[in-house]
Image (cartoon, rainbow, N blue to C red; front, side, top):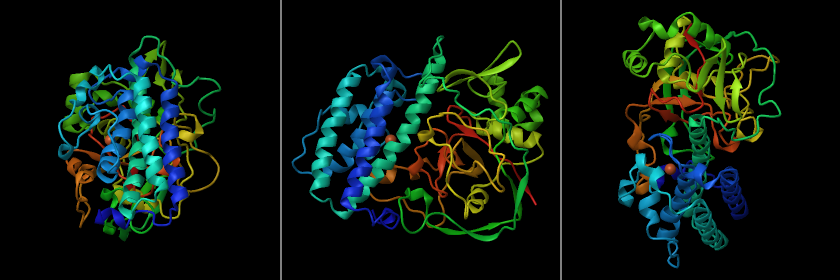
Length: 426
Ligand SMILES: [Fe+2]
């Protein structure tokens, strides 16, 4: 656990840790509360997991990484669950194949909720007994892990509900999900570049892949002061952006030919108007709000069309220095990106609204080594074939995001809240 030790919050008192654990677990239960057993069981595509699986797997994480290892008196809730709810930990054993998670019709949702309660009771005893420092670190990791799955649960439910002809809303569409306001005109902030420090160090939690902190050399660059809007993306569509191979990376163009992409994921055109499936139901596209549900390929093609480029993750992170992390996260209840504020100067929407694709491949920082043991499988083994996204989204829990946070997805992934901010060389 050495690599995680430095990054974890040593100041958390036992009471704070208990409060953190309980509030994270409550938030997940809240997400499950509006779902039927069927809603929570169906798997709408191999990349998405059933809500029931998210609720069980996050519980399995505490059971497997902490209770089974560190509590001699603990008895597993059900011996079959290690197979059903292990995600990708080779060192923990065989598991249900990911594309077949939706075949697990039993246990039902109420049994999964009983599993959650059982593990919570055991965790609460462990927390009362005063866990050792390394267990405290694992509990913190388990809480952040569960928050990642809260976001995934919402993106996966959106994908599932988008398949239904009834297009159900996860949350009531009223009151209006986003403010009606015009997007601020875009302008570009200039950065000098030079040798800058990037990555996590010091206090507070971070995943292992966010460090070590290291130097990066940046050429002078500019960064747009807000995200690209739906209205701007509609111009790209209507000027033939999806039909011009010169704008596209080869793999992205192959996706267009194979899948017929002609607008962002979840969009439809009805009577000349663009509509989109959202967590607030089927809604007209708000031209002032940030465009989201783009693949890396679409973000990159838009940037090429605009005569700009995507930022690198180091450029993005360097630009956050001194910025407030206030933003439109899941706790706002909007569950949709919101138009940029016209008030104030400087960069807007760096945090919340939607994840920002960067041109940086997800790979190891200089000096990175995965932590030892099963949790070493958390990030390091995915450092191939994926791109980094920064900044969090409208479904990210607010105390989960950091300037150094590196999310990552394959370049053709479209079901996350992924958008873009333009950059250019200065
Ligand atoms: Fe997981």
